Length: 65
Image 1 (cartoon, rainbow, N blue to C red):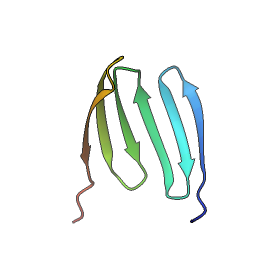
Image 2: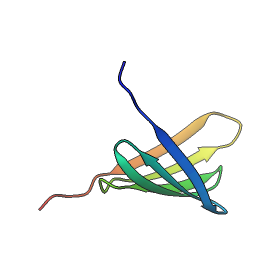
Image 3: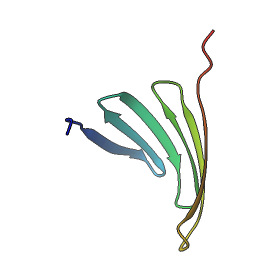
């Protein structure tokens, strides 16, 4: 099993910065919907139906030129 770490800090209501082995990411949103952006350029959108466990996620990678 490999070593990993992650530290998350809330910087404003609904905004969180996470530092991990792979880099820094920023996420914004609430329990119903949100969006996050990673240091690798990946953007993830999320929509959840509260109380059901149903979540829709859509990720988009940064295009390389």
